[in-house]
Image (cartoon, rainbow, N blue to C red; front, side, top):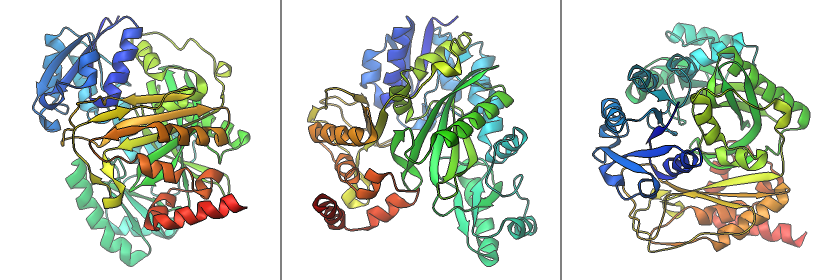
Length: 462
């Protein structure tokens, strides 16, 4: 039974979990760094406990400090949110060994699915399609060249323990592979403490589609797919649900494969299975699983009507899934725009400052997930995400119109954000048509802003 929940995170996701805990009648306790003592999550929580200095390595990533905090505040369970320790098998294991409930899957499943090479092999065992490549991490150049002979070029070299788009290189031929392989191994070792890499075919114009699941250890359900192809440096910028590229037949095959893999490993909690989708052939390939709640989970909640964060707490408390797959349906369209404290006109340089004035958009179909408030001072130690602006409407066309209206209402003084970039992006003809891939945004950003305006004028004249 969960009565007291320790939330080991910050920003909007910590506040999101506080709200879910309150609705479940739980005591919410936010574990925070010294730099985050005045956050909105701390203010809204029932209790708060400081776990260390501003540096994440000494606070949010400090497992002994977190476990000690959980014991001192007599927590029954720990929710890691996303990022930080959310996909740490060592942390999940430490929580369990301390006699507490970890809001997420078992440590062994986190380790298995967090290792990209192992997750790939698990997907193959479950009958889920994967991108052609090495069946496991490659040992050296000779094995890598043999894989390349079978798969063909270009190849992606990927860190087995990687994440967040880091540790990825592209080899166009054998000479590049010979040069890039040791560099990728060294980079993986430095970034993740694990130098293993694996290879897979590079799909140049792929889309990034992911499927949200919930599972209780025995049975899994899907909550349809999300489109996440609009990325910069492999970091998502704008997401939507459902995907404009997926038809109903493909959607069923895609989502059924996600359920099959989740049930194959006996998954428990909320998770996301990520795929590359080739919309010219209709093929999709599993690439990895995120064993946590995702930043972009709100768009799924908006189109299905289910509270995923509340559900994952209930599942961790021992409640089985109380619904059937046919009770989950898609309604309308949702779009999420990540508002970062960055200046797009200065190569996305971090923008720090104090919130002097803040006006949030309101009205039908608008949701704000954020920890910002007037007077809040941006700390320089963490991720630049400061808000998620989510809109819903009955169609994609109307959702984009509503997104524009909401962005026009949003006003923040004190530092620069990416809100203006989103306003331009949703007016792009290709974005409006849903005709983009994972490389689209990088190409779009390399064009002068005047070109985007000219495209808009041409469309308006037609």
